[in-house]
Image (cartoon, rainbow, N blue to C red; front, side):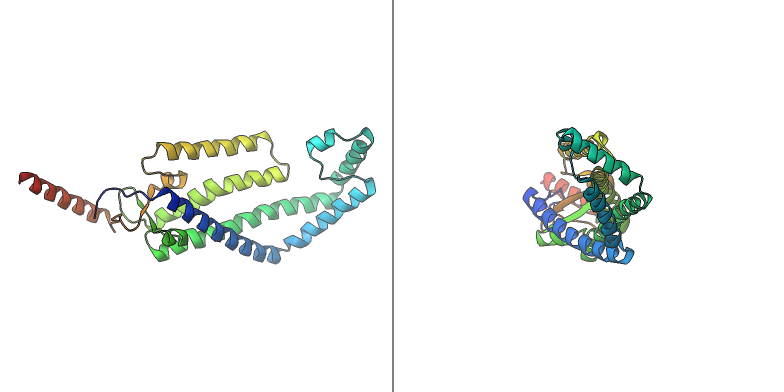
Length: 253
């Protein structure tokens, strides 16, 4: 078997990613639903929605206007909206509920995604060996260190939790949540764009086709059928010595 790097086929990587992503979302939604029931998120959210609806009815307006919609309102409609908004932000019950809903939303998303990543991107690859998720197993891919040694638990943890979950998933998700709750403006878009540019630059400049999580953990995705993956660095060095000796022996002839 060739001791060189057998990079994974791009289409296989995309297919494995899509399968893993679907499974991850399904698991995260299930975990999120369970956590939501345990902490009473739906009840608090309904209470807050009812308060919004009460003020909307009282002032004959809507809190769902975009900035463009607001700018196109008549002076009378805008005055009704402003009055409703002022009444809402002076309602201590509404403000308390809003803060709880925002905090719980972040908590729900963080915990449900973390649980999904720990199961499908960390525990499963440890069980299947060679860093293989269910998607990678289906499409014949594996993960190894850049020196062709099998990934260990700590390396896989860095790749999954620090790379995929924290850097590539939670930063964008947190920005989207802050945008949804009007907690961040242009800075959020700049942050997302910067992260995307970093991902593109890392991929374009890497001879292994690495993404940010691979760069962080020093790993590479390879073809399982053709790539030789060593259990230890010593085993890899011995194999390279044997290959070099064999090549030198053939050269003498």
